[in-house]
Length: 200
Image 1: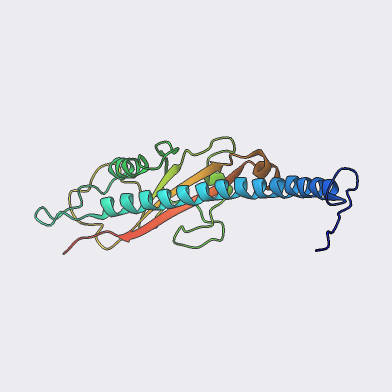
Image 2: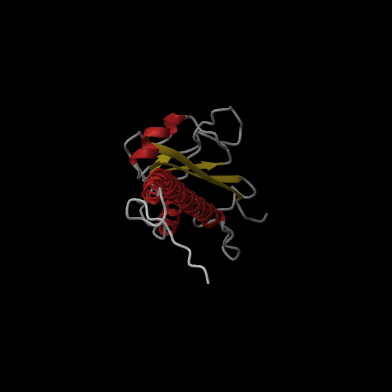
């Protein structure tokens, strides 16, 4: 048997091992910063998606509630602002971090001039920057900006008309890095059209 002797350089079995450890630590530090920034961005955008889904659900619930038809009495008992707002706010209770809506009026003006009051909306219809996670509620009856229903109609005269419930909100970004990259907030718009139910 032939014994093979190993040379030890500087007290280490492998020359340059300390240098490779330093390089690995540097690479890990750089990559961990990048990964942390990606993780923070994903957290912010996942919360935006969560709020967007919750606001769409609340808008649908408000529109569905307002359009309901009471067949025996032949009227729409919930087709008015206060009742629709109540249904929207009850749905928003399940969205953690969002306050009850603020009723702002009817039919926000669309930025592109479409007649059905769909997005994109003019920035003036959103809450001001600095007001975060507090949606503004707009209710549009039959696409008519002048029509306001403060009490339930006593008949079904609004049958087959369009009811559009719109929620506009500014989502406040949590991470400072995302704020520095895209601004302090992301506008979130949710809307739901439904035909008011009723029979002749």
